[in-house]
Image (cartoon, rainbow, N blue to C red):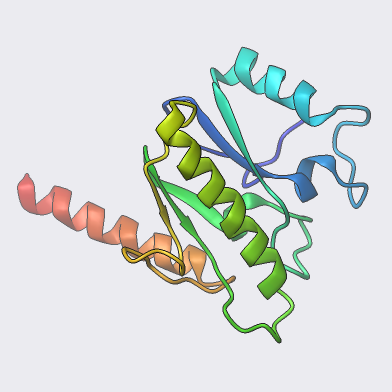
Length: 154
């Protein structure tokens, strides 16, 4: 069983999800499935060649870790990640862990294991910043701009 918002795919073999959502005991969706079993299912049913596992979603999220609250593919090779820079905020440690995981996924691209070329985050020079809760607004604005560009070119 999967839920909308629990996974995000880039359409070219990459899938993004969180361990909190699929592997924690907070809200068990598929009893007995391991990360490796999920990856086999993603490969067989969705054509996924690589799964990028983030750690946790936002604190207080009633979905217990849906990835769409913290990160999204905005193109085939770009992920926007919500990063909380304030160490006093409950989401800081979670977002820093997710940032490290995405940077590792991006770095592994050099060895041919990942098609991800850009991880937009607070730690990159080409970064966009989004705090948890602002990601949907940022992506909604990007979709509006994309639709406007399509309408202008028509």
